[in-house]
Length: 338
Image (cartoon, rainbow, N blue to C red):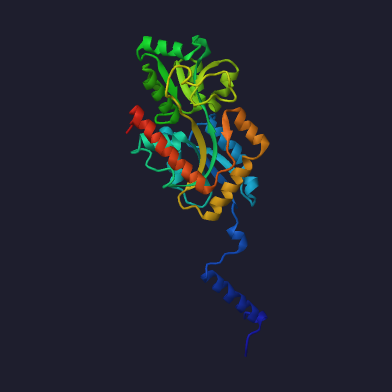
C-alpha cells in the first residue's frame, strides 16, 4: 500500500522541487539574495593613526559608500598604522578578495614604502592589489612652528646649516612620503637635519607645536588646521605650481630650492582577485561619493583635490606610473631603509 504525504511520504511536487534544487546547486547557481553585495559591514583599512589626511579621506568615503552601494552593507574605518603604513597594506593584501576588506592608502603606502623598503613592504601596488579608484591628489607643505620665528625657506636653510644636523625634522613614519619629501629637501638644499619619525599626521603637528623638531613636510590636509590658526607657519608648497588654498605661499622651487617638485595622493584598492562586478560597484560608488558637493568641499578645504573620474583601468595605470616615479625619487635621494 502506497504511503500518502500525511503518512510520512513526500508528495511528488516536493520530490520535484528537491531535484530542481539539487540540479541548480550542481550547476553553481545561488539564490539571488546570496549574491547581493554588500550584505554585511565593509572594513575600510587606513594604514595610519587617526587624524591625518588619509584618515579623513577614508572616513568621508566610508560614510558614503555603504548607502551608495545599497544592500545591507555599511563601511567602517579600521586604523592599522605601522611600518611606514605598509602594515595595514599587507593586511589587506592577505585578506579574502570578497570586497569586505579594502584599503585607503597614500603615496606613502602604495609607492614610497615598497620602493624604499622592499624587504618590509613586500608588495606592488598593481600586481598585488585590485586598484579601485583614485580619491584625490594633495600638495604637501613645508611647515615650521610659528614660535620658531622662522618666516622663509632661506631662513630655515640657514638655521639647518648653522646647526649642522642637530635640528630634527618630523615625518609620519619611516619610509613614508613625508620622510622622502624631507630627505629630498635636505639633499637639494644641502641643509643637514635629523629624521624623527612619528605615527601619523596628528603626531607630526603635535611634535612641531612642542618644538621637538624644527620642520616637517607633510600633506597640507593633515596640518591645515594648525596652519590656519597660526600655530604653524607654511613656508612653501612642494608642487610645481602654487596651491589654490594658499596662493601667497611660494613653491619650494620659487623659494630657493630649484628642481624640487613632489605631490602625493590617496587611492582605494582591494586584495588581488576582487570579482570584477564587485570592483566595478566600488569604483562607481567611490566616484559617486566624490561627486557630492559637500564631500568635495570637505576634501578641497583640507588640501586634497578630489577626483571623480577614475576607472578601474586608469586607477591601475596611475598607480603603476606613480610607483615608478617614486622609485626614481628614492634612487635620487639614496633613501634605502631595508
